[in-house]
Length: 383
Image (cartoon, rainbow, N blue to C red; front, side, top):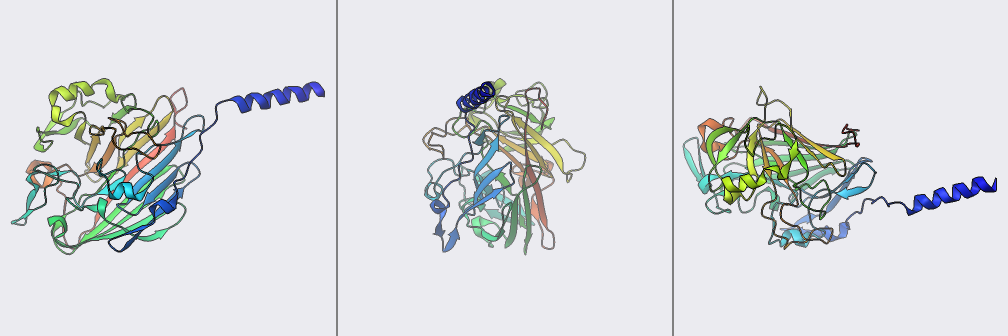
């Protein structure tokens, strides 16, 4: 009996000396309690037993997203800040975790023509308008319609003339953590006048966890054989090009860093991947698998599914380490990536890039985007 107890005591001692599993570390909600333009800003926590996510209604930002590895140890896989002031007074990356729109991506020369009327938008990226303009969805305080343990529904009204766009655009956006470990995003919008409508989600993901190194050794697969070509200003030329045997070929999964140096040589201004892929599908409106991101070391895997025609992959090329994330470490060069489902960039200015991001009165804009998380065991099968 004593011998059995001794063996049990040794087993307990060895277990306690093993590597400790990192647990979810929630941000203090009090750090996000403020008012912006007379509207209340707060932090909301969603969970489903596998994923834990914290969201602020300032820009609909995903501030934290905790995912376990194959040992059950958690890491926060999105880049962000631990205090609302760092979002409000941010000299670095503007779009961390936010919803972007009313027209995501770039509009060349900040202008477009709709029904014979030309509209000039504020230029907030050189000669271009990026992600909606000076205000955009990311700098708005969204009204919280409802919130529970796993669902957050938000609403915003984009008034006629805001950022130069026509029409009052009425928008509802829902974030949900499902029982099968999806982070679901649902967009719905209507308008009282013809306008552009093209929203997207702009979390920067790092499946190693924020502050734990670059994304270059994480493996990416994109369901695409073609992409929209861009010029030296990162603006779509209105043409398509095949990706086979180029640095943009992610038809088969491989590490992001394999060919990123070749991208630099082809288009130095991009400083890496900042391009739009055309999702392979026969029906432009079909809900389809778009991409899979895998971190072989931790086993974390994220699939992207959507009903949109395009996928923007941005490899965090302009992080410079000057900003500090929630983990207390600098947000360094290529330490996060964005996978944004959307219409093709600048489609309104190129006839070849249909379907166009135009919403008419009486129509309803709908956009499904799902980030599906799982853990890969050593043999490479999801569980």
